[in-house]
Amino acid sequence: MNREGYTGFTRGEARTSTARTLNFSGFGPFGKIARLPWSIILVIVAVGLTGGAMLFSVGWDPVAQAPSPDEADLWRDHLTRLGAGFVIMIFLALMPLGIWARFAWPAYVGVVILLILVELFGVMGGGAARWLKVGPIILQPSEPAKLAVTIALASWYQRMMPTGGQSPPLWVHGGALLILLIPAGLVFKQPNLSTALALAASGAMIIFFAGIAMRYVAGALGLGVLAVPAIYSFVLKPYQRERVDTLIAGITGKATNGLGESYQIEQAKIAIGAGGLSGRGYLQGIQSQQEYVPEQHTDFILTIIAEEFGFIGAVGLLTVFAFLFVWSFRVAARNKSWFGRLATVGATSTIAFFAIFNSGMVLGLLPVLGMPLPLISYGGTALITVMASFGLILSAHLHQDEKLSSRGLF
Image (cartoon, rainbow, N blue to C red; front, side):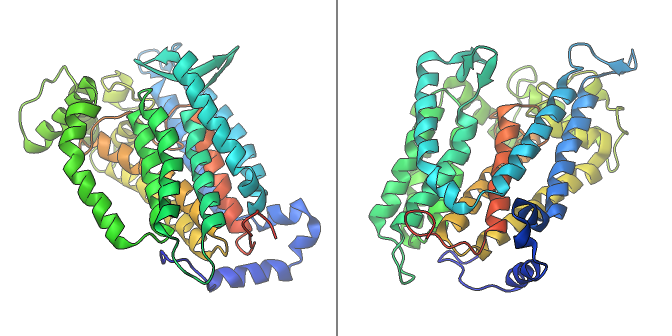
């Protein structure tokens, strides 16, 4: 996709014309449902169901040949949330982009307020205050922040983009950077480095595709490289620096403490190696069944797939993710509005960042930062947010011909 925006249509235009020829538009919301890309939706659901199957394997007791009482509910919770997420995804997919744009700023302000409340009243877990608890409801505001920041940035550029195909002035990109840094800073302070990096990555992609000059991109990259030593010494916390040290030691072949920060990576590599080409078989993973790999139901669930289904299963899953990301970027390229293009780019980039980083983390190529694998790992707010993000992408596909003014709809 051209960074300066896409203005023509090829096969996407033909599909839209075909849908109109079938008179789906005359059936109201049912016509929209019929025009949804159900093949893509089935792929998304299939990946989510794969997560449920893997979580069932996590809770399987090989001795009792039955689910472990402590982990028996993991797969049930996942499937329940997947079902709720499916309903939310379809509902959001039917929403015109103009409605998304109108709710962008209320959603952004609401998320910033929730992040501030986390700072004041957050519930501790895993050494960080990332959750808000209201009665029986536990919410992690940093998850919906991914989607809220994406649509806020897209709405900003929709309002500020010059007419006539010109690139926006530098101050517009500066405003976008400020919109990004406020929630990213609050999330980083929790501390939640993984989500802060995801916000930064998706925001950077939006700014890039909005048409910022390459000289500014090169300058930002240069400053980032120069800032690495200062960030390592003064920004990262001691346990974060230890994880970076472990990564560097593993890549360079230096000895590591097998019982320290490197334990997860070493056990993950053993599980992946044990799977070989085609795996040990479903529910037959030794590393997973005996719980040698910590956090195998969240951050390291890919090790279970690799051990039970081997190289073929793991690569097959990552190939499916790649297919979804390529399709989503094609949706962005076909959109007529800047909001649709950039919102799709941001949502896709966020999901892709987690999938790529999680895979690199499990393989020991990236530091362990707590990155769940989208649609697969156990998690409540995270799974719903991913499904909502796909809802935005599907909405952009369904309403790709919708033209937006700076106020939203015509």
